[in-house]
Amino acid sequence: MMKLFIALAAIDFIMALGRYVCFFELLILMGSLQWFGSNIWLTENLRIGFRPGNHYYETMFSFTLILAMGLLFFKPSRLEQKTKVLINKLSEIPDIDKYGKFFFYMGFIFSFLSSVVGNIATIGQLIYLFAQLGYVSMICFLFSKSPQRVIYILITFTYTIITCITTTLFWPIIFWSLFFFIIYAMRRRVSLPLKLILLGAGAFLVVFVQSFKQQLRFETTFRPDYLEPRSGTFSAFSSLAEQRLSTLGASDFNKVFLGTFFMRINQGTWDNLVINRVDQKGSFLNGESIYSAAAGAFIPRFLWPNKPKFDNSLLSRLLGTNIRAFISISILAEAYVNFGFKGGCLFMLIYAILLSSYYRMILRWSFRKTPLYFVFFPFLFYTFTRAEVDFVQTIYSMVSSTVTLLLIFYILQRLGFLKRTAFLTSQAQPNANILNGKQLSPG
Image 1: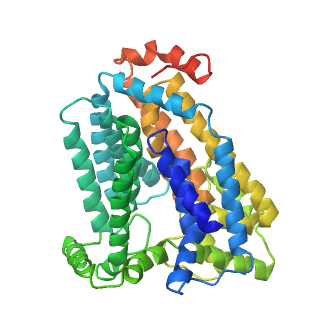
Image 2: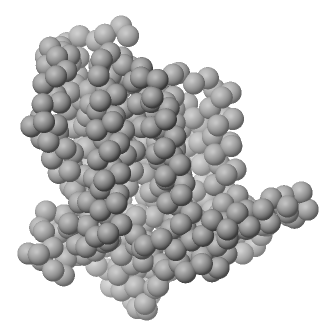
């Protein structure tokens, strides 16, 4: 049943690709792979997966089903048609390349500041979010007719690849490349064969890099702290990549490549441990980590120095030992250790409604205020598509990203950027009517 669900999730994601911003389909696919799919594969093919507790699979599969059904049930009506309207409106903005260039330079300025400031509480996180504007610029350039747009996109991708190699943290290039393709597929209407080819090539590259990433960290000065300064080397990366390429035909692909990949994404290893530990002790958190995260998202750290952080403290606390890796439990495991099975089911439904409502809010802003909000969908949702994050990372990201977004548009308005685009104001009321269902563009 679980393997069938993963197959259906993959088909659903592929079919949604190009129709609307399918981040929730991506979450369900990646989540099902990380929460239980990877361990099933490892157990059946290599016999090295963890031994799940009595009800681990039942609990995680039930929570995943509720999350999937909740996101599907509360999906905005006529989403595909509304997305087409927004795509058309964005392509009609005559000076969208100006916004792309503005976000591009802002992103690089704050990327430099982020490398200097580091992960300082509140300020460091705000600077880090502004540094992500470089990726937002790529989305703007997708709708630009400027001949220079390709140069800016290539510079951003090249910079990201360099940063990923030197930090040995590759999730930015993986997720932002995928987000870029999701928007690109809506802009250019990619055919099904091309979708499969590009997704297959991307999946192979991810599996390939994962096969030697841990060795790369061992051979460099990598430290497992979040957003650490650069530590990798190009020579080590190229040497290990060359060694792996030479073994493609000679080695067991399942063991060397797929085995390593599924072991690295097997979030269930940690989730199973904490669920078993809570069951053994019989002591649930009773919502403590959820409530404290929700409160901490709205209270600055200088007012609450000990509020929950983006770290492994929750996992270490539940296991009763110090975990050196920067990793936490998933939102599903956190639901269980707080509320048990029945309460966890209710929480997952509420969580699905929260994500869906946030999606609706950004979609509504895109119609009623300016279509430029649409290009920030990846900026706002990239944390939610990561299946290994807990609630504190999710809710903190939702609040901080939204505040940053509003600050960005306030700056744009003060600089006169929005005023120079007459389209944004002249089309505001018709766009609001479209969202309310009063009219729907045939485009």
